[in-house]
Length: 232
Length: 196
Image 1 (cartoon, rainbow over the protein chains, first blue to last red):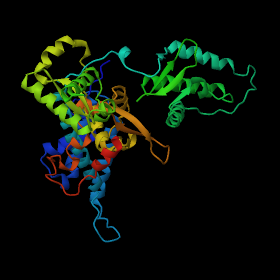
Image 2: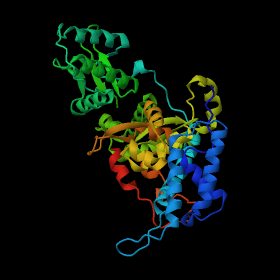
Image 3: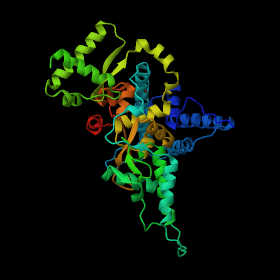
């Protein structure tokens, strides 16, 4: 399976800007019918090539057709009697995107320059720290998790109600807690009254946060309680 | 302590530091001997000496701190030494997303997607992993979405002293609009405060 992406266009705005430039039309007076036609031709080409068309391209196609149809209707006016150009919002967004595209190419130049500049590289072990901590492994986390699970009441009355628990929600909860205090004990993340699903979701949230390098899990010595801190 | 010795201390501190070292931090260490202005002056002196002696490195000012870096003339050889450590360039979507964050921070994912017109989930992940952006908190309101901002590593990656060094977004040449008046609003002034 190949996932081909046309390299030139990062999204519908990028494609539209290209079409506007290619057809040498005024961005403040876009011939919507013409541009829509070209845009759709491009989408069809993507289909023929069996490319994965991102949903955003389709949404933009719909927006263009919507604007095109609005252009055919009598001009709407605001309460003050000003004419509303159905294209105005699209133009505003295109121009905004264009600015950031420009900014991105500036950053790219800076990146190129800076890539030839090197800094001292100090291995992690030498870096200072007030207290000596070892970063825990996944297995340490799993072991600690088993400890938490062990506290669960053995027999649970079965409840039919199902509750949707999202890991992202737990991620947010953990980040919120870390906003208040600098570090928390791993076991403090788990409330005794939590049911199994909540506990599992919380644990998955911890793993995800470690993966994203948003938090670090530390232990001062073997078997000590694991500390969760926010990475800076 | 004699000034020549103080200069040596500053050089030594910068030599061992792998992160930008602020003048304040150096002052903390050297407070009995000098003031902040002296430190900045001595750093300039050091740079002048390096330049005069054709040394391969300079002291660079990055994100309110100073760090020793090699100069670009020597890049080819260092790249041979550090073959495996050369990190890939940022992709076009990553650069676009990053510039939106740099100019508009703190900003939510949805707001970034509004500008780019495409999903940025994967790109944000990459930028987080590369420490170029960080979560800065939450926006009040529905769903309390996460807010993203740039990091000090971001400044270092692009060799910037601070965000005010960036061209103002309004001034970026505009091929299509040819100097459009109804400009996109930005928070360039806010950026400085937010960075601290």
